[in-house]
Length: 160
Image (tube, rainbow, N blue to C red):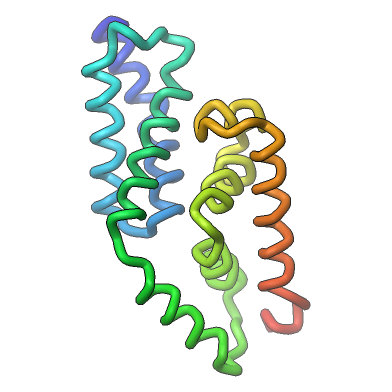
């Protein structure tokens, strides 16, 4: 990979990788760090990565960095906070807020594959390559995530 190809990859994929990471961790600074780390790793391994594999390499690297970060951070306080919110009888007026909360409740693998499929538009095969899962497992995770989302959101009158 040449310097020009690297710069082109940065121009084409930086925003998409950032959106993917940000949607998962909801912290702009950490998302920027992960994106920067991903591009740094691409630069270090530029001789080994072909031009047609750059996108998958970047998303895969960002995904693995994201998982590492999530494992480092303690999520117990977030889960406890969300559970306490669930017990309240508050009704929501913002559908996007409810969707974001439901996405954050998903297990990491399910959240990542759901976001790659529904928000970024990747095929099952591309998601399998990025996450290093097999295609059938990707489909199962997406199905389980969607069932959870449906059950969490419930009837639309909860949103009104």
